Length: 250
Image 1 (tube, rainbow, N blue to C red):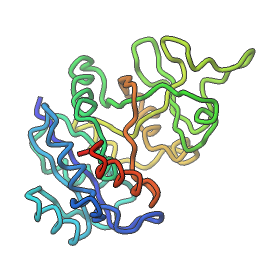
Image 2 (cartoon, rainbow, N blue to C red; image 1 turned 180 degrees about the vertical axis):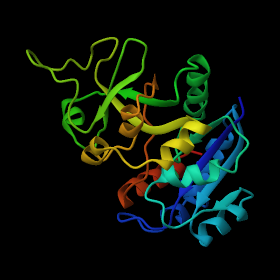
Image 3 (spheres, one colour; image 1 turned 45 degrees about the vertical axis):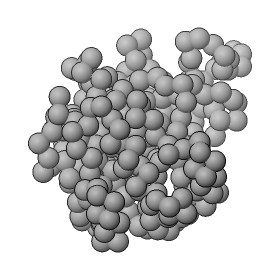
Image 4 (cartoon, one colour; image 1 turned 60 degrees about the vertical axis):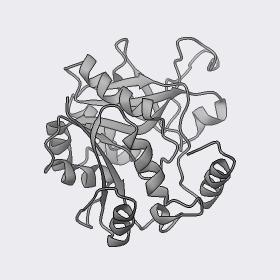
């Protein structure tokens, strides 16, 4: 399989404007993400998809490849799809530009999931939920899978509902899973997904992966034990800077 990793990155951010260009570690944040992606064994190409010339120039400054995209995209998936339309690749991995601690092994897991299940159009990852607070939080997106590891539903609500007892987060295999926003798409599936309007349930939950389930598509979910810490807020970035300066992150 020919695999490309596309990293959507935009300058505007309500909680952390200019996030991709933060550089207190001596490297741009987008550079940390790019370098992690380049460690993937599967990826033949790594591309930053952006609508901001400042980000494109920053990527070029460290020897990376950036592609300019339209400004009007509503989501990172749409931005990735615009780049994918011009790529000669079988699998497109969508890696968010604010994941500087992503494990390259997790990136490799995604195309391997699609290789193992030719009927699946999308692969993604999940991690066991460890606490009641996390399970109840609408900021933690949950996924429930069938016996083959395919997604049945995603929700911001606590699922699966426990009717007669309390959730057991130590249960094995784990039944309570947090979805991680990392995807691999078969190229044609990604292009089709980006070409159709959102599904009503997708709009209710504000979860675009529900569009694929509404189409009857199969989303294969791989289980990992740890989630990489994304950078969404100034506090997240300060934490990441401390990790880098302490030698705990590249």
